[in-house]
Length: 334
Image (cartoon, rainbow, N blue to C red; front, side):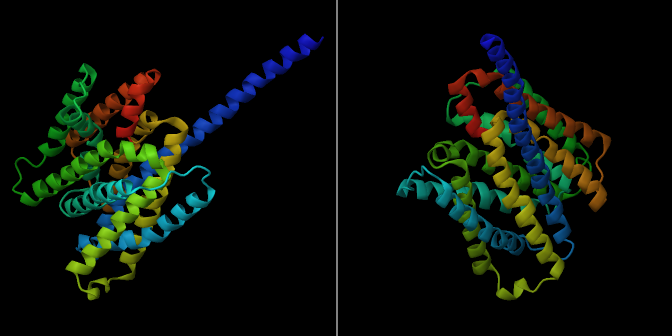
């Protein structure tokens, strides 16, 4: 009788455990999807703001001014609630300052300048190259061997880039090529940040690292504005301030911490795969809100880019059973 009751309880416990695990993972998937869409809307906010002003230095400063209080609160809450907190050494502080400069300040600045010259959808597709750039940097700098699967992914991805840019080959629009180069440079700097951040993230934790590195970038953006622009440059229409605040809250702070929690719940490889929603969301939003259109060739190129990145992400997913490899790959794919 006892055995029967025990077996019955065990049978009932299994579905409950699975249901809890499924809910836990589902929340992670939802957070990753929302974050991908929220990040993608940043380009839309920037393009809308450029309808009333044309200064990326001022717009970036406003974005980070509005972001900084939220980051300070997040860091304070984490400090109070965290039970085990590694001290921030001088080396950690220098790493945070350097990574904040490369990953959040320089990458964002290059992206904002580039968006003056390219459509939001094309810009997001070019920026979405960063996982494949990480593969290349890891091979050149860290000596990591590129697998055949990753080689195929690189070929597919950059064939897609060729198709995306094909619509401009016969058009005398030098600014487009400048914008495309700037956005791709943004992807490169962000990739360098990803490759270099693994050790610091492992030591400090993703939430604390994100808060401090982004706060450092905020200081750079504000100092840049104070050095290069007069305070009169802040005399802007109210709509610009509304867009800058929305960009700070909905496309900077919230998705940063959503991604951090999603990484904890479902892992970097799954988050990277879900992030493919981002470029599609930008293309759709650009069509609906900015009347931006892509040609059939550019659309096909966009599909190839997303497909190539998904191949890289799925390769990481396939290696989940190999713990050392997974940890190294998790550091490079946000």
